Image (cartoon, rainbow, N blue to C red; front, side, top):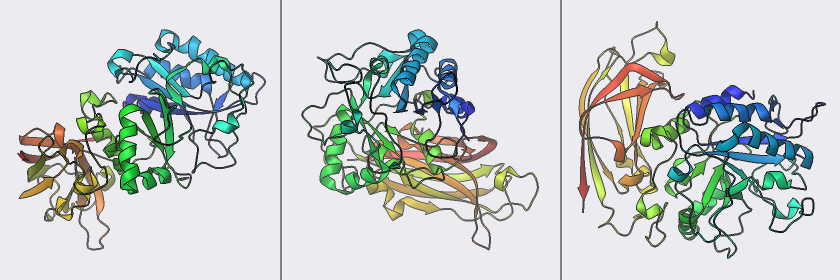
Length: 431
């Protein structure tokens, strides 16, 4: 079910890039519409979504919002899209041309309260209608339905609104014509293939130090399930597309990843993901070579107790829970694949009110800058169908040492207050 409320909810949660799948409207007024093409999703007006963006874009965060336009409209309705963008967004719409002499994107700090349009542009000195887009098929490469037909032409009025997020087809990592403001999208399977090969994974990291990449789910995910986000994020990919309406672990990990900076939707990548001269491999053992600059860490975590652990699904009635906690380190493949970084507490029988564990665990983390601690509280059952009661996730770099209270949330991001865990945290860097 397509809904403007879904856009509003995503913006209120700090989302900084929303996708607009735009098609020609069939009504007499000829207004462009948004829906997931060739599916049974309902249709909403493009201008209504832009109105919602105007109202809610900067309620959670003042940092720039990207409108990722998947354009299936004809010239006339593309011009209406351009009109609505300018008239509704006004001064919030960033329309300046990118600096051709520069070699890097501006800081989000320089684009506060600005909306950027991500779409294709007409080549320089091209007259509207002369450019046939079929030779420049962009991001919908290997995983979008072939039945999705693209428009043959691009309207100049819409093209002129594209600047720092200029969508182009990916022509390889060594393309001499690439610009810092060019961005390409990569399908889920293509991304996995790139990351599986050490050489292409390294090139992908270098690409992401200079240009923006967007990763989108495969076409097989018709159920709105989400791709696994940690692989692309640890390779420096800036935008990993998620279905915010799906309550799952990936959305929770995404919220955790951006939990710093007041959940503003942006975070500074570690130095080895910003500087191409630093040798870093996202999926290889010993991914960072300069260990003197980026030391490993031992995280000591004592899980002392829990408070007000909820029943499954937040039920008010039912059997008393038997809680236990699964603990994992997510992040670089070195850390996630290490079986010693997967722990589990004992089960506390018949006590969700104030279970006590007093168990200590040590985690040896090779790339702490990318590591996320995930704790999942579950209800033990004899049938082995252990239900999820609540979770806590946070990047290691944001964790404070000492005695700490970790509030639990569900996969929808709902705070399960007063449910929490009482912890003692200690971090030791290893040279």
